[in-house]
Image: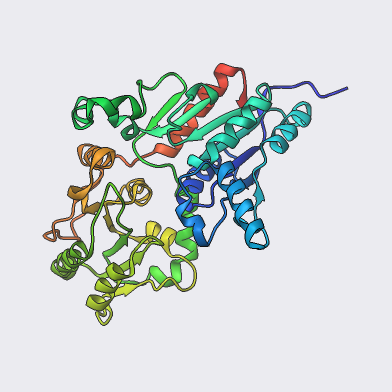
Length: 387
């Protein structure tokens, strides 16, 4: 006889797309729900290399079929994506959910990113009575396919009167979303992440020897990379150099980090300006990434406006966060920057700051609040999270 079901979710599946920014959001939510060691990661992977960089706009399934044809014609072996994580197969995951339902209860599926939408919604369609599906980031269409959608408020910026005035009338029907958030939509300020108190305590311990002895206050500078809605070039890098030089007198030490998206022409400007300055250390991308250590040990942050994830993580610490380049952002990213400043969690970086003077604010708590929304949605379904 099967066990009597108690409607408790005991495990989770994360559907990733190979991009840290998206996968960190899913894993962060799973951690907040108590599934740190009880989840599996699957990935929706695209073909890479050669012409594939120009085909990222295609649906994943069509991209893979086209790549197979190209490789067959060219006589190349078929190799896609990343090999160390299982490929996300909707039929396989749905079958697992159905077959283990009486033993392990419902399966929580958490996905993030455009490429994961079709796979995640297929899992729900194939096992509707056995799966609870959470999609992070607005899927644009068919929200009824998901049990819960977790997305930033600025994704609904197109519905505001200001945004509507920016869209020609003949394009408005093509700009999503088309309607206000419904009951199955949970809104956040920024991105979800893994920088919770447990992770920061672990990072503080792991990076103690390298960061604890640095002169205080420690200013951490995180440089991302220009995007379509937050464009900038070397001019902003030169501006950042001047501003940092102006506040350096009030810093005990400065640590500068670049992301994978940082163009070399931008990183070179900062390296050339500060490479020989004894107060400034620049991470050269060699060895372990100090990002979590920086979040734990920094006294203040300066962050380029392009990165919603880096800003969200820093603003969850309660420490001063200064933003450079926000005035260059447009559309919903400008709306995000405005919301940070209105809530007092971030301020524009002017180069006139005294880093020894701290200030505080109610930290962003998006990940924990999203987890609470998931628990509430589960309760409406008659399900719970197993402690």
